[in-house]
Amino acid sequence: MKYEIKALENYGEFPSETKKFLFKMIKKEYGYGYIPEYHEDIKNLEEIYLDNKRNNFFIAIDNNENIVGTVAIREYDRNFEQFVDIYSKDSTASIWRVFVDVNFRRLGIASALVNKAEEFSRNNYYQKLYLHTHKNVDGALDFWKSLGYNITFDTNNELKTVHMEKSINNVIYDIRNSLKGPIAYI
Image (cartoon, rainbow, N blue to C red; front, top):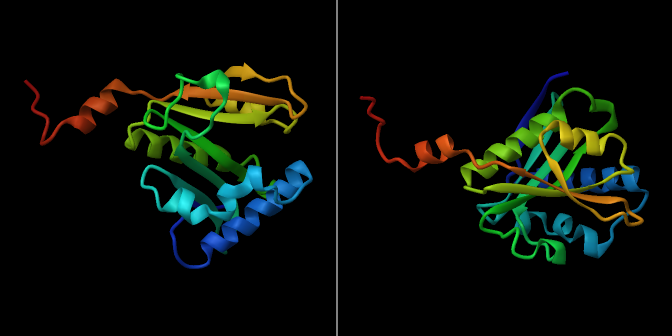
């Protein structure tokens, strides 16, 4: 199965189709629909992800231009008391809305989407990536661990929420991107 990953753009039908896809996936995975405190970013997708240059939203589309997967990246904007003075919007990006249609799983789409989000984050000089997932979502914790994310806090709450992070600070990358002009080798 061929697929393409592209940045969502603020025109055409893809923003509205992306919202439909996300709500369909949330219903399938979690069994509920729109909840304002959890899904306001989806309702305001263009404003949150597309109008801020340090945020982005990526979609995976199949040959027929159907959305089969998503990932969102944005400045860290949570206010969890456990992470005060640990994460900031300047140095930390948050991964959101990682979904792959059940018919397209185990094809590397989720990994490719996350790689694209990580690349975008490095290009925007974030140092860490933060996310939270749920232990009761089949395969989620193992997936994130396989990509190098580490558990920072297990809430042991009824939602089985686990907070994770990954350092993406790459010294060589930072040096190369901060130099102006060609590199001279001596």
